[in-house]
Amino acid sequence: MNLKVLISAVILISVTYCCAPSLELTQYVVKENSIVMGKSISSLEWQGKNKINVLKVHRNSKDLMSPKTSFVFAVNDTVYILAESNQVKYLSRFFD
Image 1: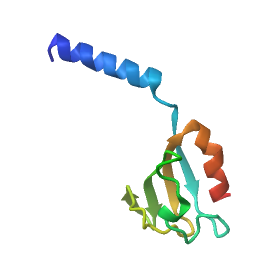
Image 2 (image 1 turned 180 degrees about the vertical axis):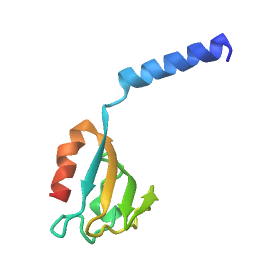
Image 3 (image 1 turned 120 degrees about the horizontal axis):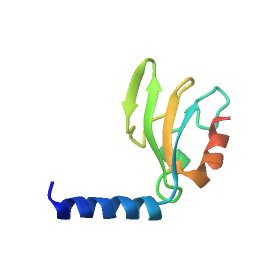
């Protein structure tokens, strides 16, 4: 790796760390009475304005990476979500 590439990488990492919003990876389990139960990702309107991304769903011993917005949540799904820190409290109400 040459010096210019190394310097560029350090600057990019510094700017990203300094200026990017704080993100959190959260994990939730879908319960029978969860708001998300039986609903698709798109119907919850999380993407876009809320900057909430479903990264993975664990169902029946299988991992579904980057589920489509048509994916419908079921009981006992373990959902992994990446979201801005200020969205975590908002998200938790969908799974309580």
